[in-house]
Length: 197
Image (cartoon, rainbow, N blue to C red; front, side, top):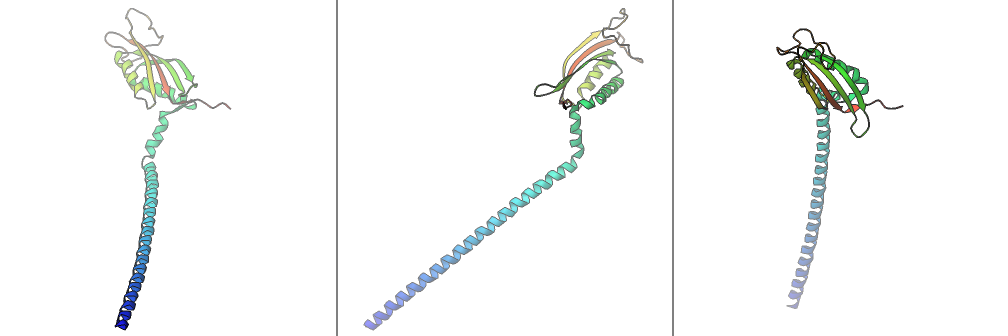
C-alpha cells in the first residue's frame, strides 16, 4: 500500500506540476496575444491619425483650390496706399452710375495706432435719388468702411450756387423740388500705408 500511496503522490505532484506548466504557458501566450493586440491597435490608431491628418491637409488644399476666387476677393477688403488712385476711380464710377457730381474735399491717411485707416470727405450734388443712391453704393463697397456723418441739404431754386461748389450733373440732375447737396465723411479700415525705407 505504501507503494501505491507513493505512486499516487508522485502522480498528483506530476499532475500539479504539469498543470502549473500548462497554466504558465497559457498565461504567457495570453500575455503575448494581449501585447500583440495592443500593438496592433496602437498601429491602427496611429494609421487612423495619420489618415485624418492627410485628409485634413487634402481638405484644406481642396478648399483653397475651390475657393481661390473667394480668397482672391478678400484682397479687395484691404486698401493699400498704392491702390488709392484705383479707389478714387472706383468712386468716380459710382458717381457716374448714381448720376451725381462729386468732389473729394479731403483725403487723409491715419497710419498710427492699431488699425490704420483712410479718412475721406466727399461733397456731392444731384437729385435726392442720385445722392442717396451714391451713398448706398458707397456702403456696398467691398471694404470695411464706417460712414461717420452725412450732411444732406436742399438747394433752394433762388440760390445761384450750391453749398459745396459743384456744377449740377447733366441729364436729370434734380428732383422736381430742385437739387440736393451732401457731404459724406467716411473712414476706410484696413488701409495699408507704404512702409518707410
